[in-house]
Image (tube, rainbow, N blue to C red; front, side):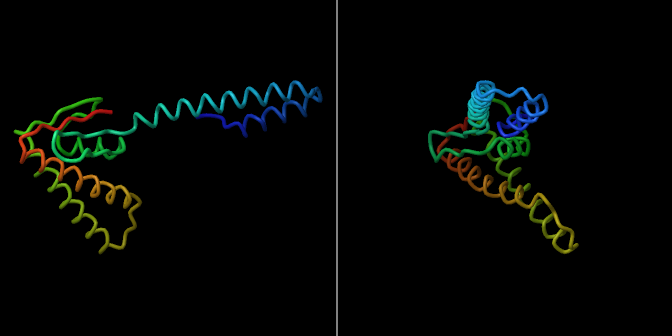
Length: 155
């Protein structure tokens, strides 16, 4: 895990106070190093976050963009291996549409069973997110199938 600039500043302050050898230039140097670390972290996170999105495209239909977790869940439901790129061919689409619809039905049944049992589930947001992603993804698959276009994905 990363140390935040505040954590580092606290560590520097404690070290400086405990050693009683604290000069203004030493504090300024520490602050500049902390700011540089903050910028490096922001740069790293921005690169990492952009690779967290999958885009599913077809020559027909709107692009579907999903966060990595939702996309990889969707790909595993349809039996595709998540990766940087991939293709769903028109010949596969009927089977894949059926798999997604079956998973949506299964999730509704599980939610009903859980609701009747009185048990709280912590992944309710994940189920809702999957349904929303699935609706858009199904629309893309159905439109692509009707027009005879493959669907491709990439990170």
